[in-house]
Image (cartoon, rainbow, N blue to C red; front, side, top):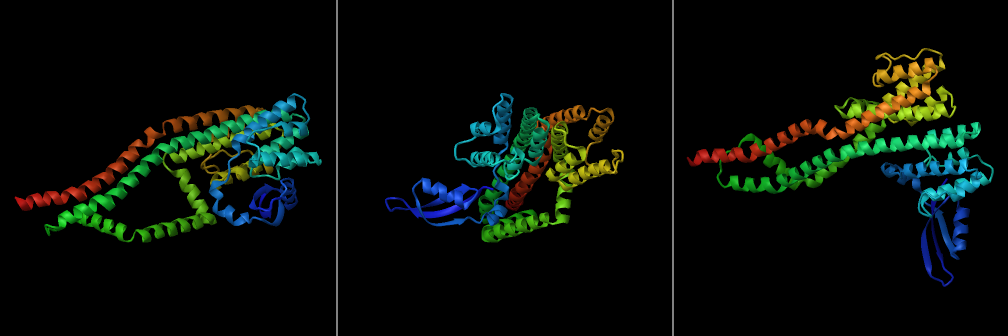
Length: 403
């Protein structure tokens, strides 16, 4: 497994040097430094375990490189180029990049007698579990190039789904950020000036204005306490989410969100059926395929429903498509899977379900701005009205005083 080693040493001219290397063993780190003619004085493994917990949200995404790898390898395999030679020819990233280092090490493991799928299994951060199992089935069946092409096509579609969802969320997030910034300016700049102005007249202010002034004073005086409190709440929320009950509650709420819940479910169903189709066409048994898909599902409630499907096949029962058995998986998708099993055309049904829900995700993502616009308009309008009343109600009172 690729790890990081920090080293210090001296060059042939006696200059001190230090740095880090991404390799899979200390021996390889020493060999690489020896080639650079560096005399090593100290070398140690970087403790990445603690950093991985902190940086778990920033894990590198190798999806694009993996798609290109699958396409290139399929082309080389069809051309009759030996596997080891093909692995050495594939260049999907900059030389020395983490993915290229991983590919180089995979080639090394293959040259030592390991199967390609076994070598890839050593690097779960770069190769999807579903992809590895499909490659393993392709190696056993002799249809590796076909499976690689199908896998690349499916991964491209899933990557496109993710991009569509991220793109659709960008506009509302920008609007929310702008509103938060505007409220911050009003609370720290505008309202204090109005408070000073109104204070000169010694008149009683409306409750809403007093409340806003109090919030403004608190924000300016105790801003550090606010940030600390926000950090504590975020930490406690993260800890709560890591518990079994917290994860179940959060995942359930996410699936019941207006608009977004429907988008999450349809994206999950599209991903599920597209990946299921890869595994099924690769010849992997249905129970084994569902187990892999269950492990790759992040939402605990959708994972449980996939586990229930798997249990039905394990016990030889008919697939239950009722609402009581599957609260979140769409009934149409389940009926089509059941129909495909009964007719012997499961691969066609899975492809059709994947296409349908991919189009649904695209439609919702495209229209997301117009769908959430009424909600955002009401919310932003309410905030603006609240701020306007807190500022202008005292003015009307002052006008009455002057009259």
